[in-house]
Image: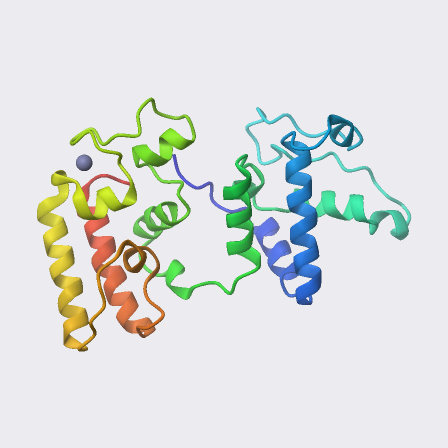
Length: 235
Ligand SMILES: [Zn+2]
């Protein structure tokens, strides 16, 4: 499983929306979240039935979960709440629009549009960057995450029969001991050289630290990316 590459046009459209005044962005967030709940049956079905038809969720194209929006000839109707929410929904990047779990959906929506992006999230080579992102958004190939999406029958690690969480992968699993020791030693020496007494936590590994400079964080990310690559796990 991997994060579907973002459709450039939709992504740019919503980025544009994120430049609206803060209140409008928050209102958009609420409207889109409300629509998500209607679609996924958290409100009475008559609400869902009052919407225009939606593309079949089994549709394998980019149109999956998109509404067939009617053409509104009058600006008043086009810009009123329901049509404009449907259009914002349709313009969501595919990998966000298709998320069924409300918590994950809201997390991704917030990360994308309400918080300033962490420049570190775009650092590094594409392969490592994608694995790192999947781990951050709890959408990785680790069994604990796959199990949450009903994609495997057990959340456990095949090597040690413990839940294969990100913490297990980075800190516990015996399969990666050698690479892990190297990773921890290198991160430790980066921190020690700066006389920084930062504990090496999962949070530091996944997000970097606001206490450290961008350059120091990128050096830590390089070490983490090297661990991900050499572990051979493709998380
Ligand atoms: Zn293990």
